[in-house]
Amino acid sequence: MIGSGPEGLLRELAPQVLGAVARRYGAFAAAEDATQEALLAAATGWPVDGVPDNPLGWLVRVASRRMADRYRSEKARRQREDLAASWSLTPPDPAPGRDDSLILMFLCCHPSLTPASAIPLTLRAVGGLTTREIAAAFLVPEATMAQRISRAKGKLKASAEPFSLPAPAERPERLRSVLHVLYLLFNEGYATSGGPDLARTDLSGEAIRLARGLRAALPDDPEVTALLALMLLTDARRPARTGPDGALVPLAEQDRSRWDRRLIVEGVALITEALRRGPMGEYGAQAAIAAVHDRALRHADTNWSEILALYRVLERMTANPMVTLNRAVALAMVDGPVAGLAVLDGLEDRLGDHHRLHAVRAHLLELAGDTKAAVVEFRAAADRTANLRERNYLTTQAARLAAG
Image 1 (cartoon, rainbow, N blue to C red):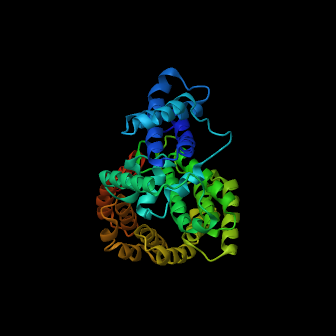
Image 2 (cartoon, rainbow, N blue to C red; image 1 turned 90 degrees about the vertical axis):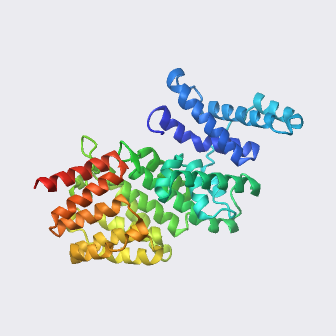
Image 3 (tube, rainbow, N blue to C red; image 1 turned 135 degrees about the horizontal axis):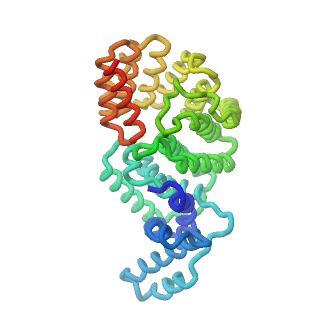
C-alpha cells in the first residue's frame, strides 16, 4: 500500500515509469508487469538503501532490465538477443517534464475493452490502486477483479494500440471511461475503502492533478470541467472531516470555518462555467450538489430541497443505487425520516449488504426515534466496513445510543 515518504513517491512516479517503458517498447501488458516489478524492488530496497538521486531514472532502468529478461526467455530468444542486450545497456530516460498519464488513461480505455474492464485496468496502471481496492470500488470479489484486469491486459496487447493519444475523432467514446476512472480514484482517496486512515490524500491529489491535465487538454468539454469542480468542492471539506485524533467528523458536525474557501470559489466558478457550456451531465449534477453544501455556512442553512431535486435528476441519469441512497437522506431532511426510510426498502437487492446502506438506515432510524433499531444498524454497518476510522465512528454511535 503506497502512502507517504518513499511509498508516496512510488505512487507519483508509477504512471511516468509505465509511460516511458510502454512508449519505448510498445508492449503495454509486458511494460505494466515490468513496472510493477520495479516498484516492488524499490519498495523493498529504498527504505534500506535510501532513495536514489534520480528515482524515476532508477525505476525506468530496472523496468527496462525486466523487459530485457522477459524477451530473453521467450522462444524467439536468438532473434531478440541483440535487441534485449541493447535495452539493458541503454535504458530509456523519460523526457524531462513528460507526463504520459493522459495517454495511459486513453490507452487503457481502448474500444476493445468494455468499461467494466477498462476502468479497473486504468485504476491499476495510472492510479496505482491495488486489486483489492478496485474490487471494493466495484463491489465484486478480489479474485473476480484480478481475472478481469488480466483479461483486459490481454485484449490491449492483442490490439497493438500505439502509445499515443487517440485521434480527436476517437476520443469521445473513450472519454466517459476516463472520467469514471478519475471519479473512482478521487473517491478512493477521499473515503478509502479500507485501512487505518479515513482518507488517502495521495490518491485524491493525484485524481485532481489528472483532472486538471484533462481539462487543459479538453477545455471546452463541460463534463470534464464539472468533474474537476466536483473534486475541488468535495476536497475543500477535507480539513474538517477528521478531528485532532483522526476520528471521522460527519458533515453535520464539521467546523465549516476549516473548509478551504479557495477551492470552493474555484469549484463554484468551474461548475458555473460547465453549466453554461452545455446540458447538465452526471458530474455536473454531483458538482451542483456539492456546491449547495459548500455554500451553506451552517448545516442548518443547507438547501435540502435543491439537493433533493438534483439527486432526482442524477438518479434518472444514472440509475445508480448509491445515488438512491443519497436521495433517501435528502428526502428525509425535507419530508422527514419516515419518507427517507421508505426509499431504502428493497435497496438491498441493488446494493447488497453494503455498510453504507446500514449506516444510512441507522441514521434515519435515529432521527425517527427508533434508537433500538438504530443500534442494530450501526453495529451492522461497523461489521461490514473495512475502514478502521469508519468502523470506530459507527461503533461509537451504536454505543452512544445503547447507553442513552
